[in-house]
Length: 333
Ligand code: NDP
Image (spheres, rainbow, N blue to C red):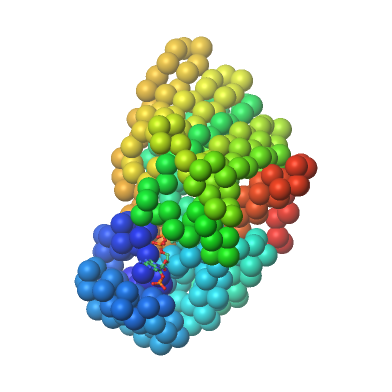
């Protein structure tokens, strides 16, 4: 698959370009940046043959099959619609857009154009999360009562930028991390949040956007989810717990970009370590995306998954702003 990378971004540099090239025949042919200088430097640094400032001329390259979008969030919609209109498959970063309705437009456009459109929710591609999902699906914890997600981290200085001070670019911990946790809850439990209560704050990093959020979600099954995200917690560590009528799962260090962490299952039989595959999350996600473009299976996180995770995250923000329980408004798809 021959890729156009839209956005001279950190995530592409640190993870995605390598993941594209790790696939058989995987090639990154062009990078699109709003700055000619930055785009050219980025292309040279990463061995990408072409740098463009004009998305349309990049999309006109017939030697490309797919577009990866990792610009700031407010640009995703227009860029995705252009790529879809050009007949390219699209892997788009989370959050898909600034509103769930905009994200739904992307999904519908891709469906009508007959191209694959997916969301880069990498945690679904983690061996730890897949092992946990399997335990839940096999009934090893019985009926799920609750999920607690611990995703309060310290945002490293090189990622602070627009995330901590630019609401117009989609800054704030809720579009950045709560959206991942929303997808994680749906993935692990196979269940949908119906409503949320929430609180948020700026606790030292956020300037005009929240840098911390806590929320409680009521799931369709009756289970409850408690979710905590932050940019300002250097030593909190990450993890999740699932508690059911027959067992509990304790996972530590698993809300991460790396294939690391520990998973334990506790039941009446005692405590057991749960093994999982330590494969690269992003390479797995790209492999499943490429297979889906060939009609084999589906992407790890579809466009529909990205719309729902965004709807949930935005309901968390609305609940925190209003102080009222928010019913989640999922767009019709
Ligand atoms: P970056 O801040 O690294 O890049 C975003 C945009 O910022 C780039 O497209 C680029 O614009 C611009 N930019 C980059 N460097 C500079 C600079 N030195 N000066 C001015 N502008 C600059 O963002 P991230 O890579 O952290 O995030 C990009 C997207 O990916 C977001 O949507 C984010 O939510 C998502 N993401 C997803 C992750 C995941 O695991 N799924 C992890 C991290 C991010 P231009 O392209 O015009 O040059």
